[in-house]
Length: 107
Image (cartoon, rainbow, N blue to C red):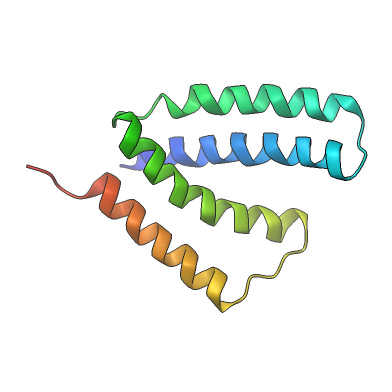
């Protein structure tokens, strides 16, 4: 389970980091190479996600919960975002869903 969580975190960093660079290029007039690097990192995200042992549906559903939490953490770090109680509650609910979807014992 720890290896799987680390892969989800790495995938999240790739997707959020790559998307953030493209966001900066388009929204904040950063140089074109921000978009190029962002696109490359987004491609890496697609590769990293395939390292999960679960099937596509379970992997991407689970990743969605990680993405929610990591997006809030990213915004706190890089955009001085302060989550409110509903952001935090929603993130907790998403993580509970993640652990049910991906890590519940199945027969």
